[in-house]
Length: 346
Ligand code: WQD
Image (cartoon, rainbow, N blue to C red):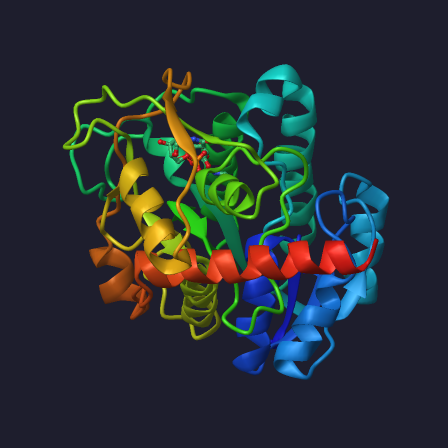
């Protein structure tokens, strides 16, 4: 198979870190991104780390004719890692059709092109959100998929179903869905990281923005959950570990080691951390006190979710290497860098 890989959403948070790891492993990368939630400057960060410039095509994948033109132009693309999607849970409730178009319409267009090829590999960004509140911890891949709490969550469930159905009748297509737990952090070079737009919905960017004074105070959503300290538990995983798992999954498909042509893996560390433990980690690595208060629960939050990582460890030969402190430290270093940059460029 050609080692030219299309990375959709390759300028985004997880996408950009994956492009770096792909290039480090000798893959040739073509990024497609419409920069709706990213900037072209991310390319400079990728080049600074790897010394290599990926191909870059800026367009909106919702334009089916542009998707077709892309695959005609880059007819030697042998695999796709598909990150391009919308990911704000609340926005998906407000505007479900945007989510179905972005996350499912585009998926269909890409699969239509891939199924025309003699062989192709496909990696899909899925989410632990498909498990809802799982009955048992840690969560294994065969835990039941629970009814989605939001259109966003539904797009991940339905996305997996679409890929499964398409793989069934297209044996020349091999796909892996990676169910991310909570990716956080930034590249250790401090050249790329998360760039949330507006008020961050996720915990770690909210903490680091509070740390640099952009936000007044963090609200801890609920401290009366049935957990040791009363706050919710998640499996926070360093984004570089997540990126490396994508390369391992792609290698499995490229080398034809997959047992079925549609497989699913959890991407987590296997360790759950409470909201208060994440705050303590931040205070430890930054030496700063975080201004926070306990607020009411947030609608839709599950009590706890952390991964059983054995399948990914054994089958992909991959494991998360970084600790929570490593990941939070990298997020903090990145936050300080981007805020300094903003100060000096105004
Ligand atoms: C983590 C914990 C909050 C913010 C979501 C999506 C999931 C996903 C990742 C998409 C929870 C608490 C948060 C704050 C807080 N995929 N919290 N104060 O909820 O596990 O998952 O993001 O991109 O699909 O559902 O992650 O970072 O939002 O929250 O107390 O200001 O932090 O209640 O317990 P979550 P999160």
